[in-house]
Length: 597
Ligand code: ADP
Ligand code: MG
Image (cartoon, rainbow, N blue to C red):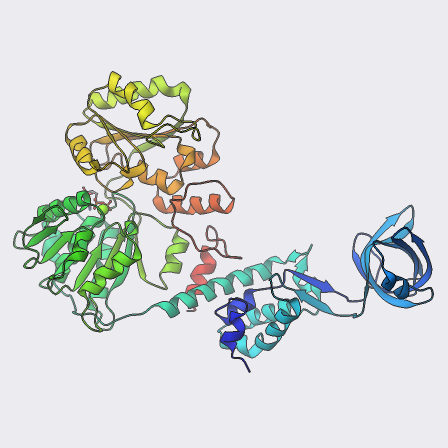
């Protein structure tokens, strides 16, 4: 006797609920009909009255005793088998769709059937249907479903779908009824969360971190926002837990003030040491500068990069660096590991860092920071695997207007650019490509730069493959007026004087990318502008984007457009695909399922 796991693996399923949710795509219903309704499939006992062969067709007159009616049927591509089966006078069960022609009843695509009064589920898979039926029969039972944690309604629904007694209970116009779909959504969310939870592994922390940071917080030149404080308290609770090392992702829009949360965490860790890894030298350096600016002078801070180090990392309380950190084999004992802009690192790199710092079966506390907002529903789902904190507000109210523009608006765009530059602000223009391409109906950087360089001063250019990217950005930050770039500027370097961004061919980009680019301007609350340049002005996606500011709302919009099959670039986080759940709209269902795992 095979065990459950082996049986499920035949269908590539890992849980019983996967199978429960694998509902029939169709049913073969051979329940005898009680009436003759035109347009419906009917099943009835029929007596062959006459048979006529026409080429390879067979025209049959049937009498239906139950209804006392005669009905015509035509069979195509007949074989000797059919002659035998439809001999005059024989009685057989037939199934077919009923139609009417000049007052005569007709059967279209009639089939002789051997079994009646059965509803046979049909499953969509490469396995034979009979095999699936067997698997379902052996595993889907009241008891097994109860053991999986389903409630009465859910159990009855699943049983009804796999062992139907009456299709009118479950189908309406051939699709599942809405209350059934709702139950399937709930089970799907529950099944998913249960699996994630099963994957979560926790380790005891290498140390409990409990340094008081009240005086640090009051030493800051501004008040932390409520959400910054809320997240800091969540982290504090993690640090005090003797059973589990922190394992938390903090997600907040660009400019939501995550750096202060990082610094507060390093403060809470004292006198234990912490480490912070950033994806680029520029970002690492920027974080280092902020650490120097906000942390008490007594704290020893070191910077580790491929090109240079500052301070002695073996002695430091707080080590900031790039992935160069991963190649150090003489790091001191670390009890808090943080990763900024975590989505820029591969899982391997992130894991390597925490391995470097773990000792035996105890682990350093781990915090990851991300500026890619995910839909709230996704955050809820993810929280089964890691703890998730969201920062949805920014310390400054951003004042960025977003406008969709086209060729016709170019001269007013130019005057707006000139006016910003005259106020000492900076401009970013994002092109789809560096070099000209036939595929894309927009200018590339190479084609456009001549124009900008001729008409403006202090024009800087950079792109993803540019080796000097960091230097160009630093130079531009001090001396530039206009920066021409590809989407590389997505990386979170802060350019506080940037107040105007033009995104060329905006409709080609995903909303997440557009949001990141728009987030580059107006970082300090200065009035700023985002222009979406497109040949395709009537674009619902861009319009909605222009009217939405929160990254979390945009992530939800993105989902909606993705569901509706809009074309978008590949930059978004790979969302979990569900058969029944709609991540854009089923927040309540997910919330409910979370309380059950
Ligand atoms: P993020 O990393 O989330 O994109 P940062 O931490 O870089 O954002 O913060 C953006 C800017 O806001 C920085 O200049 C930072 O010093 C400032 N800042 C952070 N928190 C506050 C606050 N509570 N009040 C005022 N300014 C803040
Ligand atoms: Mg940041």
